[in-house]
Image (cartoon, rainbow, N blue to C red; front, top):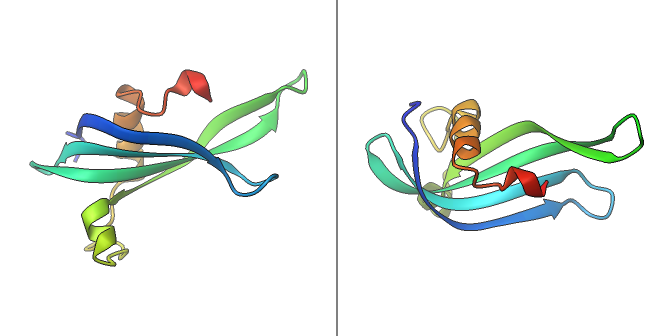
Length: 104
C-alpha cells in the first residue's frame, strides 16, 4: 500500500496533552488509498527534547492513521479493521508536507 495519493488537506493543528504533555500534530485530509478516495486522519507524535544548547527540539517518533468513516462507525480494530501502516503514511504525509514540518 505504498501508493498513497494525498489529495487535499482539510485541517491540521498542533496539540499537547496538557501543559507538560507530549506534543503531537493532527491532520484530516482526503487521500486515494487502496484505489478509492478516503477521508483520513493522521496523528504524528513528537519527542520534545533539549539540544546541546538547551533549546527545545521536536523529532517525529510515531505516526498513526485512521479512516474517518470507519471511526464514525466505531471501528478501531487492528488488522482487518481500521488499521493502516503508520510508516507508509508517515512517508506519504511527509512527502505532501501536510504537517508543515518547518512549523514544528
